[in-house]
Image (tube, rainbow, N blue to C red; front, side):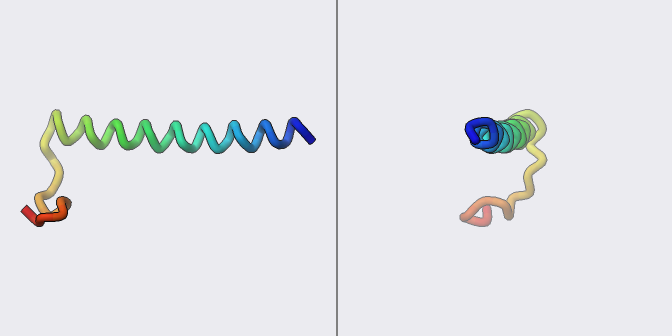
Length: 45
């Protein structure tokens, strides 16, 4: 029973890590290439 619980937490951590990597790439794209459309921000500008 302990093995399945450990596997569950590892999979959640892996998903969180993947999301963090995708967010880091998105932010790097903004700072390096400035390719984000202006409508993406809350103020619309």
